[in-house]
Amino acid sequence: MDKFFFGNRRFYEEILIIGFPVALQNLLTSSAGMVDTIMIGTQGETAVAAVGICSLFSMLLFAAYFGFCNGGMIFFAQYWGARDDRGICRAYGLTLVTMMIAGLVFGAAAVFAPEFIMAIYTDKEHIRAAGVPYLRIVGWSYPIQVFAMAIASLLRSIEKVKIPLFASIASIITNTFCNWVLIFGMFGFPKMGVEGAAAGTVISCVVHILVLYMYCFLDKHSFVTRIRDHFRWDLAFVRQFFSKTIFVVCNEISYGAGQLILNIIIGRQLAQGIAAFTVFRVMEGFVFAFFGGLANASSVMVGKRVGAGEHLEGYRDAKRFVVLVPLVTLLLVIIIIVFRDPILGRFGLGAQARFYARGMLYIYALTGTIRTCNYISNGIFRSGGESVFGTVIEFCGLFFISIPAAVLTGLVFRLPFLAVFFTLYLDEFIRLGIILWYMNSGRWVKPVTQRGREALAAFRKQIAGRRPAATPRP
Image (spheres, rainbow, N blue to C red):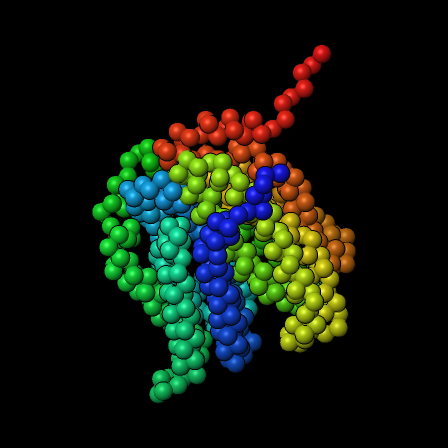
């Protein structure tokens, strides 16, 4: 074991600088979402259901563009480590274009064909009628959201994480205020109900992008405003970009599709189990808020070092994250379990639903710990330049293990709800061993920068020298 296997002062200082603002932003976003839901809930269950259906379409948009966003961050972080400003600009431009295609397509569909979209997601006429005007308005925010996400991802990758946090705070405050004014008709404004919530979302997105772009405009060294440099691509660069991002995109889309199937199976279980599962997702979001910060820190820190040719230090940081993230996950779940009864009491669950919720927390203390270890490893592989291995392993585990197991336990044999819930994480146990082996091998270090490629051969020799030599045959 390395002397500094658990990390040195530099390691934890970088985590605090890069990861903490992202974790705080995630917590604020989750809290704002709860406030929005409470305000929309005053308009009745139909309004809540309609907005919930519309959010499923938004999640599909997220899956469509987030793969390109994650793929772009591979290049941002590595070029940042190599101090290649031209590479960062080119990568940002191509990332923005690919993401914006998804934003414009989904935005046009929401604005011009909301009836068609709502008909796909639900056969309830009253829910469709309530969701159509919301979707028609909120669709205008989709391209703006994509633009803001692209800028925020670039800023985080070059270690300017406070600006996206401040922009999110401004957006959240604006959204909450506008929702209050427009939903309830305050200060002489008309009482718009669900349509007011949609309008508040659009206005808050405009504020978000304005704050981000204002900072970039005032920063003389900003990559975002160097528009001419964004489109200086050549065929070799475009090929390299898509060779890295295409598997990440496929990963995000397939994962979204797989989770949709699993949620459909859960939706056909006992009503008490479904209610408990909904509450569990809220508590899981608390864990993933911190996980998101650590995941962003790992991608930036490892990617930066791989791009700079400091492969061994990046390799060591990666192994430190593989230990740190599961420990943090386990600690957070234990804290939630300790305070489970006061927390569950706020959601109005009955005795049976509370039993299921407690059981899910106990299961998640083990399965969630393993899941975050697998997730952080897959993210590290991508930041190191390897986008294929993690995608293939995750796809095979989800579609060949967890989904068939959930179908058998939940739909065929009708086993108890907690047994069905456990199968959602079944693939994580099998993936863990494979992923840790690949992490330790160092084969995921595949730099996209010239400096990184020049240092690769020496790194391979260092890694080979750290492994026990094979025993010669007699």
